[in-house]
Image (cartoon, rainbow, N blue to C red; front, side):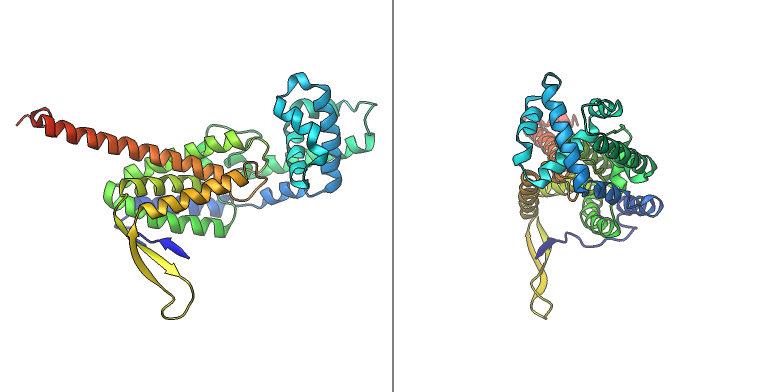
Length: 320
């Protein structure tokens, strides 16, 4: 194992904005952390619930093909031959389809009345779970999202380990950036990266009932920004292969190694998990990376253009 350590764990005096962001995340975690997300996922472990939805929704989509995309119609045609995971995703699509739910509410005589009654009862329970949960209200969900949730989700977390690991990375990477470019730039980059992460999540996770929570997307943007801005700068890495005297330590390597490793890991995860029911949202990580890299490229381009202009005609920059 090898992890970037940068400047290490900086104090509040050296990185006040970093610590303020960490404090906000901790306070929000103490006030609003719940396990309602796990409760919603539990509904989709009910085989009868999933199978009933798949059967009814398949017929509904195929009989109303003009209202659905070719991808969804093709999905419905193939659903019986797909994996249980795909059936769960199709089941989530059924719950999020208002037309289908309104159709079931009429309780058509042509449908299995027992299955329809069971689904409607489960739907009411899911709705209540979502309505009563701060995690769904402050998190970013594709089912029903608000603009404010594109920012509030960045301070919510799905568990204490999730919170701890994110804050540790934020302290290391955010502190490094703040010590060199100031707290305001860190704060703006954190929010913008989280915004980009959230928008990409909404784009690629249209069949997920699990809300996006956590600072991972924001931190990914900060990490990419730092690694590109200080591309060739040697930074400290912590390596560990065991717990004996000579099996761990520190080594100095270029910052670009971190960027390449993180991007490869997140792209691989994204391609393998384009439609998650939960777990790590790699699409959000990629969204954060894209914002961080874009911001760094804009600043580097400006700095390079300014240098060219100074070399060409110094008086344009400094009339003295």
